[in-house]
Image (cartoon, rainbow, N blue to C red; front, top):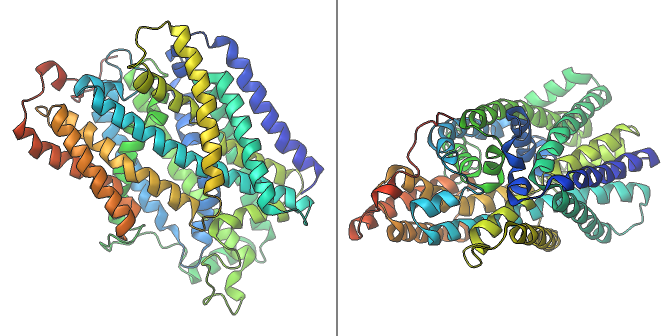
Length: 507
């Protein structure tokens, strides 16, 4: 990398901060700060959803999946579930989001069950999202550290990674603090274009750098079964199978896109249920295309580095030999082998993926679901001030998470998704209880969530069950236990039973 690359990278970071600050004058109320006054067009929301899903983890880890020994395209089986989950959300959940004025999705649980359920679900979201995005921040810092050490080979990589975590984290905090949700969405629209352009540029350079070009890449990939797509085995310990993808991919999507404030907040920035449905379904088609593209980059990297020609390839401890892990492969190519200027563009693309900040969504949840119940009837300006303070606080927390997990060797994609899936099951389960088990009141719903959380912790720490099954298992346990426990309690009032009933809004 050259000076031009550094100028592009830091110019992008500065530009993001300035762009976010430009939106500050529009943030006069909590509705402005969290929902952009519900005036964002559906296509911008669709692009924002894609940019949100395509984190740095995706940009770096997915190519590493195809590159690694035994890696292939079976990751795409998850995308089938992602598409199915979107259809279910459009039919079951989105209509209820536009009945009344919601600031967070967990307010629906308050209307359906009561404040205890709402606060538990909101707390689980805050914990999960900070951990997952702390990991995402770390991955971005690893790339920045690689950029710096390419200029200063003798620099301490550990120290540079720590400094990078803090630098990127501060930029993310400042941007979100001033810009609010509307700025987040519009920046994500720009970011989508940047990282797609960066990925295409990397693919073109790789193709031209491989002896024999695309033909050789396809031949090598075929020889090592890289294009294997389906695995129909019914093995709960395997992460990527057809059934784990269809079922295990559908349920996490129902959770992340249907009951997680991070993404639901984007739907609420539109003014109609049909616009939100359109945005969600269009985003699914784009996500499928880009996952195929990222896996194909992994195939190209496999031929470029040709690790299979080394005598120690099959016996190497790391499946990503000669690298310590799959997450290291693409950053190495970007920082060491791409031409000046293009290298800076792709690193900026990685930063673009990392800047899909969750801080505004976490602040919205913390203020509306966890703070307001204890400080009710305060002026809106007071809640807006608290929102800014919490944005700063949770940003510091995510920086702390990144620093704590930086010594983990496990794939960051696998680590982040397993943590998210661990607690998303109980939350999705209680939404399904509210939708399908109309007589269930708050006490049996709490029992169902408690049982699900306990079982999921056991599964996480004491079994080898793949994380792709976590949400399905967790939500099913919540549904079954709450249904059984409901016979010991009085049914929910009729008015509450209608809060999560399906049916497309006319709006």
